[in-house]
Amino acid sequence: MLIQLSRAALHGRHGPPIGPHQIWQMRVMAAQRENRPFETVRFGMLLALLGACFLFGGASRNDVASLLVLQPLAVICAGTFLMTPGPMRWAAIKVPMLLLGALAATMIIQLVPLPPSIWSNLPGHGSFTEIAGIVGIEQPWRPISLTPDRTLASLVGLVTPFAVLVGLASVPVENTWKVLPLLIGATALSALLALAQLAGGQSSPLYFFDVTNQGSAVGFLANRNHQAVLIAITWPMLAVWASVPTEPKQAAVKRWIAVSLAVFFLPMLIVTGSRAGLIVGTFGLVFSLLLWKRLLPKRSLGRWNRLLIPGILAIALCVIGATIALSRDVAVQRLTGISFSEESRLQYLPTLLDMARDFFPVGAGFGSFEALFRFYEPLELLRPLYLNHAHNDLVELVISGGLPVTLVLVSLLLWVGIRAITVLRASEGSRALAYGRLGLLIVISMLVSSLVDYPLRTPLMSAIFAVACGWLSAYDPGQQGHRRQASRM
Image (cartoon, rainbow, N blue to C red; front, side, top):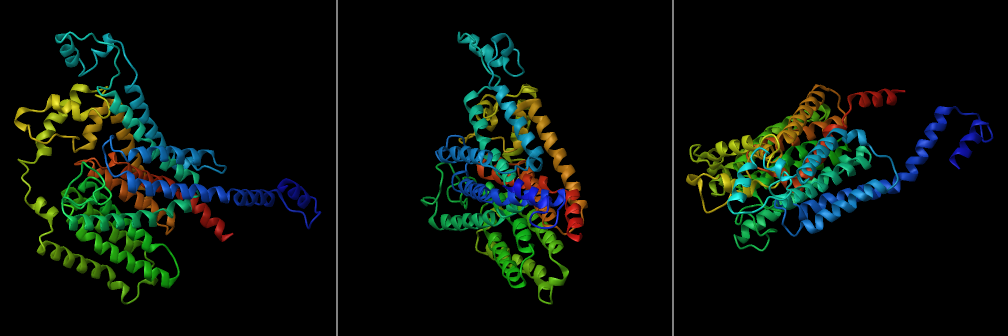
């Protein structure tokens, strides 16, 4: 019908003739109207998926029961995003999707069975062949991974960030920015839950997972370090959310809500007891204040608003002092009382490097670290507790994936560096640039925290990382310039 109307208009049946450009605009507008209901469905599914990540995706283990809910939901959401009519912004997530695909391809290759003559000659695998020969076990065809069941679980775990990336591509870029209030609100709920957990003590029924930091403020997550990183990356989220142009009265309300939440998150970060979270949180707080000051229009800074940032710093110092005075400064105590000669992460580092060297370039297999470390663990470092991860995710990835994953990591860092130059050099005041810089801060914060922990192994944090990569990747300075030129015509 649209084509008929266009032809009629072109021949002057319903008015003066119009050109091909106007016809094309009519078709675009009609397509947008037709796809609007499907865009609403896609956006609703994206919000539901992110909300489910908070409720069911807070643990890094592959055997938690909540994954039986989250992973099928992620598959359903991904299918919905791909099958519903409407345009897909694949170019906006091209590089993150390629990197995720390369990671998945590495896991698939590690699951391909190999004949004994090849398997036994792989780097690091010969010792296990000798042990099998001693006990008289005949070698069957085996995959590269020493723990193929856990490698398969790791591969299935990629469905969550995959679904989030596809969801971001399935909605207009403006809708991707609308997930920010959900992330902030869910983090605030996690902090409130953490407060209730502290009040209930170690036996509190409010802990979501059996294997968790009992007695610590973990919120929706199982690990206090991950909760601290979640709070730390929320500060720059608040800075961008409070700076989005709105009506003056709404802007003032949003500004003070952001300040209140930022101050509330301060003691909640400290009581987590996470040293890495305290360092990343300091980074996030400082850069969020700088980002906020840069985003706020100067004309909106009145006499009192100019004192807002110094006032926030003064309140923050008071809150930190009160938290320390009330003896809830677990993170500060752990940070100031650190002994680098006794720090287990540093003691384990030589062993971790030996593991990476022995299995390079093929890797030991994703998910194999826990079992493999028991084979390498020095007698002098034996403890009642086992080491589930290397607490240096970059090193563990090299142990697990060898050269292919090393190339993926290098590619990720190069891409982040290139995008950082792009968003930091730009001087325009667009919302796309603000969200691009926010994505950059979140990505850097999570990568830095991965040097001493493993936050990206939780579905929740990997989903937020995917959102941040989507924001960082979506900013296009050429497109922004084209939009400004079009708005002047």
